[in-house]
Image 1 (cartoon, each protein chain N blue to C red):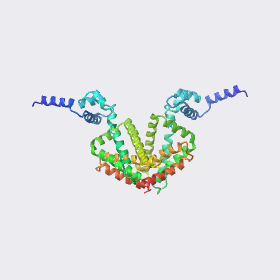
Image 2 (spheres, one colour):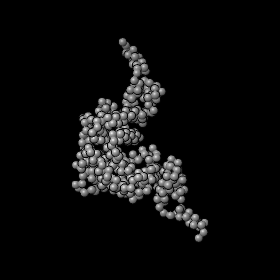
Image 3 (tube, rainbow over the protein chains, first blue to last red):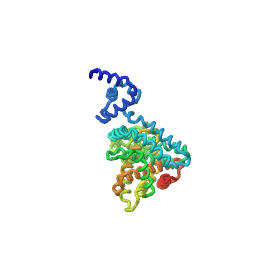
Image 4 (cartoon, each protein chain N blue to C red):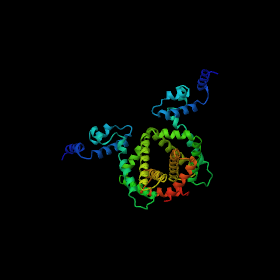
Amino acid sequence: MSVHVINYDRQRMARWEPDSRGRLEQAAFALYAERGFEHTTVAEIAQRAGVTERTFFRHFADKREVLFAGSGALQDLLASTVVEAPDGVTPIDAVAAAIEAAGAQLEERRERARQRQAVIAANAELRERELIKLASLAAALADALRQRGVSEPAASLTAEAGIAVFRIAVERWVDEANKRSLPELVRDSFGQLRAVTAGR
Amino acid sequence: MSVHVINYDRQRMARWEPDSRGRLEQAAFALYAERGFEHTTVAEIAQRAGVTERTFFRHFADKREVLFAGSGALQDLLASTVVEAPDGVTPIDAVAAAIEAAGAQLEERRERARQRQAVIAANAELRERELIKLASLAAALADALRQRGVSEPAASLTAEAGIAVFRIAVERWVDEANKRSLPELVRDSFGQLRAVTAGR
């Protein structure tokens, strides 16, 4: 088989193979890392993924959305873990279980999640968007706690504390020097939160 | 003195009396409450305050800035309270003292602060801006704790927990049915945070 034929096959595959969404994500993350989020266009993402711009827009509203598409699923995971925790589990333990489950999910896609954090950290607009998404996650957790009969302000305080732990655990996780898993850092950070609020 | 002369004097005062900044703030808050933030222009604020638009822009970058102009002073108050807390004060108590001091300052301008919250709550862009300002306050608190020798992640966790308490105390405070002062609600919310993180 000649090189030419191989290239032709690759092109054909790029054009027709399934999972164009996954390839768009991969292309977007690669380009954001190479040339920065600001300097990447949808046209370039589509070209790298071997699909049309129209295909891009079937999957994502804009190039920012590639980075935040997972937040709906994350929110569902957090809320359902809290709602489905057995009776008698305290609010903070229900939230800790939810954050740890989210951490386990991100740990499975460790490289992608770490790339994502680096892209967001480098861009003020993306950092703002991330704050807003985190506030939505906190609101969803508080709502799930109220469904468990937790009253206010305990529900909101527990939810906000949980999201603070999540944020800080993720920051520790993406640190170059870190070797620990995200669920481990979530557990450790909850332990530290308990210690600091107890005045130690 | 005739009514005409009184009106003339008022106009003259409006044009020349000092504290144009204070009058601009008052005019802006009144207009935001009357017709909504979106539907208020800088020209209208200046006219209501009896100054020129140029005077407005000497004090504020835009109409949004009228709502956030106080956040620099608030950040200084939080950071200096933490830095200046006596040795031996635990991180969480230093942060609680700072948040309570901020609460006392807002309590002094109770009506203005409550109007401000109502304007922000009604507008998505302002809610986002508020989230970003709160994140800056958390970062300033964490920085002040590190200056006291508190290590990471304890410094960031304590700071984030403190800002969560602040947000939730302010939400409780602006509630129509609430009769308690903000410093009182800050103390109560810190107590509730301690209780929830201890698993109660």
